[in-house]
Structures are given as C-alpha cells and as structure tokens.
Length: 250
Ligand SMILES: [Zn+2]
Ligand SMILES: [Zn+2]
Image 1 (cartoon, rainbow, N blue to C red):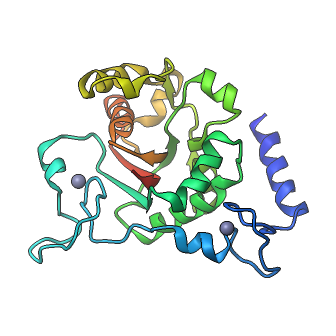
Image 2: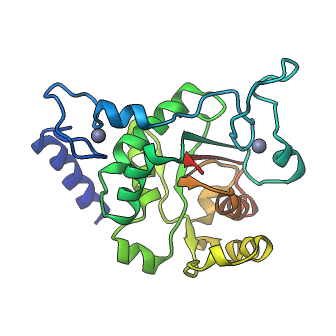
C-alpha cells in the first residue's frame, strides 16, 4: 500500500508541471519559477538565524563571546531537563509560515509539506550537529485524527525529508494512544503527564531502536512538551540520542 502511494506521488510530480501557482497565496508564478512561493510570500517568512540556544533553538539577541553556539544554553534549558539533545526550527511561527502550515494541517493541502521539508533537509545537511542520525520518526497523531485528516502532517514532512536526505522513515514507531484534544485547557503539569501517558513506542518496532540516533519531526514547536514526551518514550525504549526538527517555532 505504501509502495502504491509512493509511486502515485512520483507519477504526479512527473505529469504535472511544477510550481505553477504559489503554494501559499495561489498567485500565478513565472514559468521559470524554481520555488513554489511567490516573492511576496517568500519575503514574509522569517527564517530563524543564529545565534540561538544550543538545546531548544530559541534565538537570542547576541551571544556572549565566551560561549560557542554549540554550548550556549538559555535560562529555561538550564533549569529544565529534556530528553532530546537539541531542537531546531527553520522559521518563526507568524503570518509568513502560517498560510502554508494551516493549509497543511487543516485544509488537506498535502503539497505544503514539500517546500518546508526541503528547507528542513537543507538545514540538517548544513549542520553537523543535526545530520548524524539513523532514522527519521514523525511525531504521531491519534489514529482517529489521522483518519479524519487523511494523513499525519509530520509524516508527510518526514517522508519528503527522507527522500531528500536518503534516509529511512519509521512512520509507526511512535503511537499516540488517545486524542489529546483538550490539552490546551489543562495546566502545565497535567498536560505533561497526559502527553507522557499518551505517547508510546510501538512494541513491534522497539528492537529497531537499540542504540540508534533518531531525528524526530513535527510541524510546530510551541512549548516543546510534545517533542519531549516523544523523546522520553524513545529514550526509555533504548535509543541513543534524539534530535528534533520542526517547521516553525511559536
Ligand atoms: Zn504567494
Ligand atoms: Zn533553550
């Protein structure tokens, strides 16, 4: 089944001319466009530039010269433990990326994953602190949500990144047990507990994890709680290290 849909995707890309209209605003693109976004939409995206915290990837005003980027930790990261080694997002979550991400998440615009995933792959390839991993694993959504949406947006991002980077995705390595719909209404502590209980490693795949380095992929980083719950499950199941990447940081 997975093979069939991959073939269908390849055929689609061959048959249909690429980049006819802008992914974000649907404005017509010039015939030689090598980017699926018009110039306006491109300039609206605020890419994340260093310096940033070496753990969570938060941008900081300016780096004290005594630190190297590799070692600097922001105040939050000094105070709390996380199971992942580092997180990086490619863009700030504001109006610029929102158009594409909302389309990917809520309007069944699966094609939005492509541009973002290729940008994420480029960031990974250029940073040796991110590029040393064995498998790509998407953050899971609950099966009911996956059926109603038709796909898991993080899995689409992971698949495209894998194709660009020549790596393997394990899509069902992590499972989400229950719909975590009302998370926003819970306090920080119960939200954390509920997430940790909800995200589990697929027992049938657990053997694949032993001493492996995982690249964990999600669409948006808000508090880092979801990525940390996933990382904890992976770490406790035996994997050696976890690096997280997302499209945007809220
Ligand atoms: Zn546009
Ligand atoms: Zn930090």
